[in-house]
Length: 327
Image 1 (tube, one colour):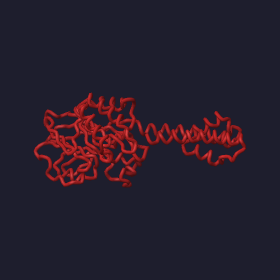
Image 2 (cartoon, helix red, strand yellow; image 1 turned 90 degrees about the vertical axis):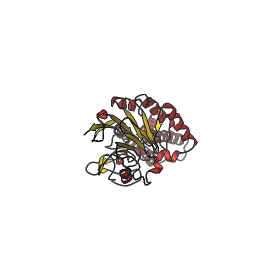
Image 3 (cartoon, rainbow, N blue to C red; image 1 turned 120 degrees about the vertical axis):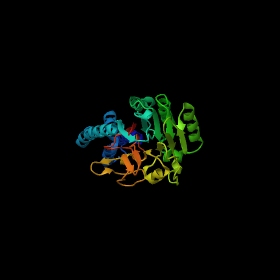
Image 4 (tube, rainbow, N blue to C red; image 1 turned 90 degrees about the horizontal axis):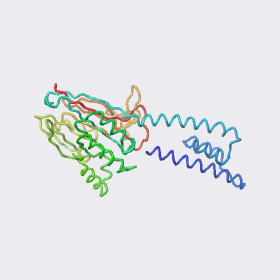
């Protein structure tokens, strides 16, 4: 959404500058430099600049503008088509978790993980995202943090997502770092609202499911010593927002850990991996996929939305589907 706001503002600015320069020319006042008019088109304002040329009949006789601005509009349309495809092409990544601790009755049990939505728009009422989740036929839906974004917070987007999700399957939610930054009266009301919808918040709580223990850690608890926290005699599925605390998760007795936070490294470079984490770690080792630490498996979702960096490249928004299998 940050990128959308930027493009709207820069194009309004470009249109306005071309109009002002035409007015200054008519009134024989000091003009806006041609370099500035070209520059504003180069940094994303080309459609606004072209519209300004046509509406105000300005610079239409100058070859520099007649040729350059339409070319920049073409580049603008191509790049934005590419970025929109990269940011909104939803994919489902399926994993099988095989263990002798999976009860016979849970063979084929489906957990859908949603992470790092960051108020991203996926259709009215988040309908496109919800349809993809529905197609996975989940037994439960788990949300591993940052459904909200602290820099462009839209409680309504998150509310629409949860309202639709609870109609598909039971929903369990833990908070991430962005929710931690938003804590206050408004966020408390949000938790009450989604609780009334039927969403179960698992921050530092456990829920005994039919055949396994589903546990969650709040963002503020990720770095704490939780050795031996969970029972060793049953399957433990742990929800935790950040993957870097994997040694803590392993010592807790968790068997399967579902995390997010890293956004797939934002730009995935073939042969090198994700470029940068939200913590500004370059080429982080843990940025997506399935990882084994002893007898614990950790799955990292690339997530769905963006925060500080508004664009993904080679890193499509991801829904994670985990199928439990009896080994």
